[in-house]
Amino acid sequence: MPLAIVLGIFLPQFHAGSNILPFLIGMMMFLTFISKIPPQEHHFTFRIEIRALVLGLFLTLLLFILTKFFNLPKEFLLAGILLALSPPANAAPAMSKILGGNPVLMLIIFIIGHVIACFSIPLVFGYFSNTYSLELYFEMAKAIFNKMQPIVTIPLALAFGMRIFNPSFADKFLRFQKYTIFIWTFAVFLIISNASYKIQNMENMDWNMFFGMGVLSLIFCVLLFVVGWFIGKPKHPIEFSQSLGQKNTVLIIILAQTFAKEMPLVVLGPIWYVVWQNLVLSFMTAKVKPSKLKSE
Image (cartoon, rainbow, N blue to C red):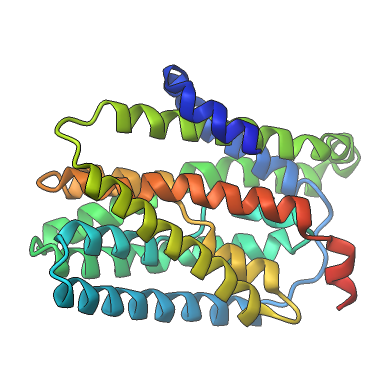
């Protein structure tokens, strides 16, 4: 995966391939949920997402105080809001399975996280950007819902339908699950390539803002993954860390470009987060031992 990140940075001309990302994520979803589903502990779900929301609001308040105290540009605050309140990434359930976690629990967290984001991001982002209106609220909520819905419904309907109505045929796809990590690596390459292309085509780049956003997103990324891991112990460190740390960067990049047009550099926060997030996930896939976690 580190190679995919490096290649993505230096090969922005492949940004056009990002159009197939929904297909790649959908394929990962399908391969993840084509398996037999064990009994679930649903009571963890609400607790995880409430903690994620509370932590996101706390980080927003803390960042607001810091930007006022140090007289920092408003772009830092708005980028931080999107990072703090972003729902989990589309690939979080598949990544949870790769790391040895519970993909079904992560899927429920993913869906609930996006529902919460439909309410929290428009309210908080609109308030602090001084652009809040009922029209803006519904536009942002609709954008969040529309980005999640097709990636979830189609592959899950295929996987669950096949498992219910033709389980023997569904079993034939199980041997392809080992390729999920390669699909994700290719997806990371396309995501980074697209982010690199966006940065190279920005006009009037403020390099202090550029590197400042890099530091801000790095702090957020490490903090969210680490906090998620430790508050999720002993049973669900993977799911907690994925819920808090693995953000739907594609979604918040679109939100930044659409609803912060007067401050175009806000998008640098989510773009930088793409790099840090995938470096952390690369580290986790190399270091996290599923068998060890299950024995804890």
